[in-house]
Length: 560
Image 1: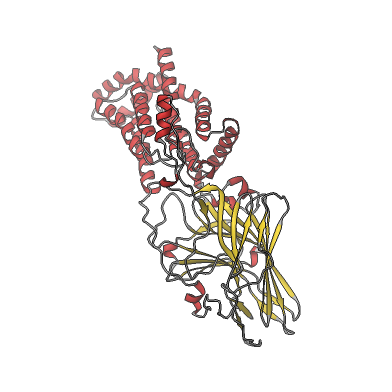
Image 2 (image 1 turned 60 degrees about the horizontal axis):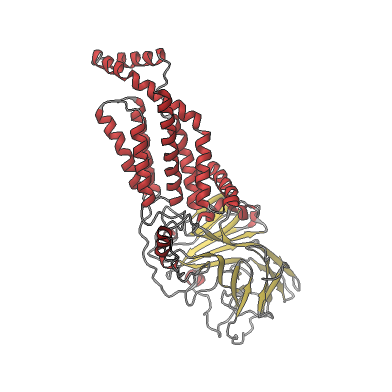
């Protein structure tokens, strides 16, 4: 078997093995609801009850303890912006719900019925299309009894605050739909020792939210406070992280991203200091918090018996003199993992998008796709245009490869005769073969060069299509309504396999008949593992094959 054929087979098998290990998505079981309790209850066994009559502050030694009257029932405050609808609760002065208006949940039941579209396309008649109900993406997932995300507590401090304490607030709702001005929600809670204020600042232009936590010392003695900003999230105990994305804590420590698997989070885990940002993420969305002073910030993560994950950002230790106050500031980003939006925050949050080792190719590919989309308004068409651009760039290499393979095909009879002549001397066969290549100015590796170059391009584009939210639920036409998901009817992978088979048949055949049959099996192998690839990537490979067939036809006629 010649080196080119061996290399092609090895590379193909390598791609297959990489796909099996890293890209195959296991089946996802149904969620199972379970009763919840807070992480502080599990860790310290001293957190207060979530009932209105609960005590809302824990006085530390050295401070007077004053009985707290039963608290009023919690009420909700709605915040409406062009990008999301948030519901805050006076219970904890925290976030009860946040729905993103520009993004819908992933589920087959939420998509339009495509059969009327297909009938209209092939018959020319106008069939009514009844859209099915779509649900906005919800970032908050809590169960009954759980504290809400963005609750602030003060463990290891002079005075703690329960995550379910009832705060006071004057506003009933905020409407930022028809304004460009920022607006605030101010939650406050007063105890015998301290007064806590939580000030949320909303910007109608995007997904960033400012948060200031003011701690007023109401005593004449100094107190020590260490804030912890908490994100609480229920996690399905049956769900397993798959290779397509990570659901759980993601922390940037000194610029290095740490992702923790929820199923392995059985005890308290602490990362830091020098925490640049902390987050609870999914494949396409993120709830992140950025401290004002990373060098003095740690992140504490726990998972309790009721499968509640708590990601707490532990801030600096602050000594507050009697009668004075201190302010702890955070920046929040609660929204899509959109590269340009995350990059504008200036803290490396864009690294939360898992482009992996091929980031240097995935980011330019995404930039070009977004640029082309601005003209054609269809990411599928943009992918086809990008495929054409890549093919034009590699056109000279393709010509060189096809010419080299034709020359090697002409030399094949001489090589076979040489193998027969020196069949007992492999070293002699190798040296004579290389001499024959030099004599006819043939490079045996030039035929593999386009394939070697396209492998990193392929994986870079794979990452861009798989993890860029711009491609999520973005349609091409007819049955392809999500370029980041596999073709539901396997039409494009089968056509792709057929075009690869045609391309393989047009390639100059070299080696013995058995080698040629093995090479003809490669389109079948590729078809099978392309079945679960994103349809956008299949379209890229399909149109690359079509252009390659055209180039091979052109070269074969020219050399005929």
